[in-house]
Amino acid sequence: MPLETRPIKNGFAHELLGLRLWEPLDDSMTDKLRELWARHPVLVVRRQALSERELADFSALFGPLERVVRTEWASPAVPEVGLISNLKDGQAQPIGGLGDGELQWHSDQSYMMHPATGAALYALELPPKGGTTSWLDLAAAYAGLPDRLKQLVEGRNGVFSYVKRLAGYQVVDRVISSEAKRKTPPVLHPLVHTHPVTGINVLYLDSTTTIRIAGMDDASGCALLDEIYSFATRPEFVYRHEWQVGDIVMWDNGATMHRREPFDPTARRLMKRTTIFLSRERHIVPGGCLASEEAMA
Ligand code: OGA
Ligand code: MN
Image 1 (cartoon, rainbow, N blue to C red):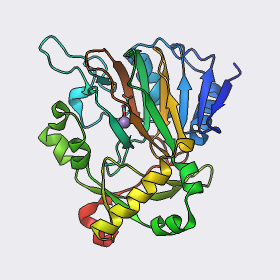
Image 2 (image 1 turned 45 degrees about the vertical axis):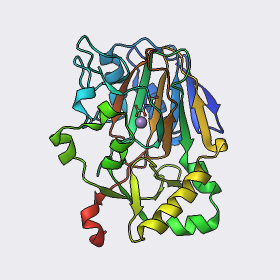
Image 3 (image 1 turned 135 degrees about the vertical axis):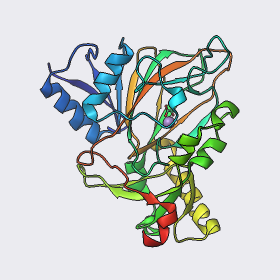
Image 4 (image 1 turned 180 degrees about the vertical axis):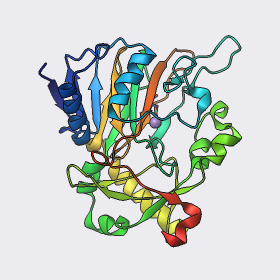
């Protein structure tokens, strides 16, 4: 089957047409999709009707699936699938995570020493307005960065902390298990990586977890980060996805940030997601170390 694709935003994102992901994909199609995802960090597939098992099996074509530290967001039926929703169960408890609030520019798992950088989000119920998700092209942002800023970030590591991420969440999502806390000490990652397939330099940023730059005092590190964020988040680097039920968006957190606009808390939104350990041969996978080992980094 030929794969028809439609580039979006200079090829940063690609829409894949004609796929029926509820049917098994042959090896050559799987290879084509792996190759595409390596080169285009955001892939969009519309009009899919998938069970949780089918979503997990499709996602696992790209790497082992991660069970995220927020085990309370896992689907009871297929725990590799996470529920991202504002819906509540019969006991008025959230069925999943991330509620209805705004999510600022972030990169999933940046607070992990070995982040699972692939994600797929599948839309099942959507609010009439709001809840739109946008992705930011951190390769294009790096390419456009003034030389002065390139030089200042080159060779630098950021310190990424889940405690900072939690502070930006709505109240119910701020409470975490002692197990989750144990698994998320602050970590260091380089702020610039070279992509293994394209050979180009890419920023690695997360405005919701980065607390400072290693080796810089807090004030100058944060001032530098703010300057980079305000440059990198220009509209020319952003793809804003207008969700339709049945959409799957897959993205590479090693080369993007994403954000979500808030929506009416009384509206219903249900998304299912998977988290994937993408391979270092095809994708940027930040290798970190504990921030407490900073002196040795
Ligand atoms: C996520 C996320 C955004 C959304 O699942 O990591 O940021 O639109 N979701 O729900
Ligand atoms: Mn996210």
